[in-house]
Each structure stands twice: as structure tokens, then as C-alpha cells.
Length: 117
Image (cartoon, rainbow, N blue to C red; front, side):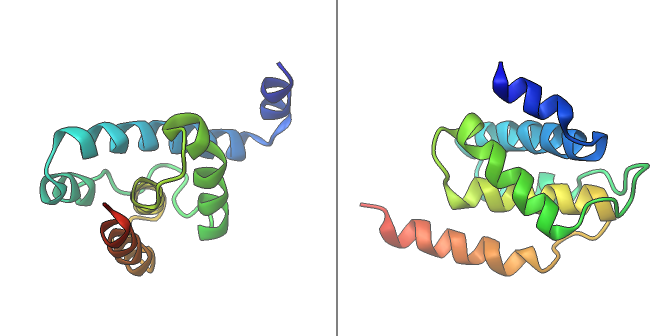
């Protein structure tokens, strides 16, 4: 109940960003389980371009929203779904696909594949 109250006290733009982050994380988690990575990446690259509030969210706010919501959606904080969700949120918000977050995504893929058993 306390979390809900805190959520409702946030500004409308932050609430919207958190809801988008939850939806994108859930969709990406499902996509990573069901689809080959290349297919998922092509689908994400075709994401709708800027929403009505184009450029509303800064990269820092997007990173905040993804990091706050990922434990609730993913249970843990795997880097790849977080990076994909951040990339998708950024591209939908600004219309720029494959932004500077691309290097973070590649870093995550390398880190997760090198630590796998």
C-alpha cells in the first residue's frame, strides 16, 4: 500500500515512464524467452516513433525508471532486458533508434555470455 501511495504522489510524467518501463520489460522478457535475439532486435527496431510527448524523458530518467521497475518485473536485474527496455523507451520517446545506449547493450550481452556456465 505504501508503494502505491508513493507511486501516486509522483508527477504524471514519472508515473507514465514507470508504466512504460514495466510494460516494455515484461514484453522484452517474454520476447527473449520465445524469439531468437535477432528477431527480437528487428521487432524492437521497428518500434513506433515518437509519441505525443516526444523528447519528454531524459536518458537519466529512463535509466531510473528501468532500474526501479526491473526487480518487480524480472525478479532480478539482468542487464540485457534492462538495456533493451531502456533502448525501446528512448526510441519511442525521441524517435532515435539505436542511440548511445547501443554500447551499453553490447556490453551487457558480452558480460552475460561470458559469465554463463
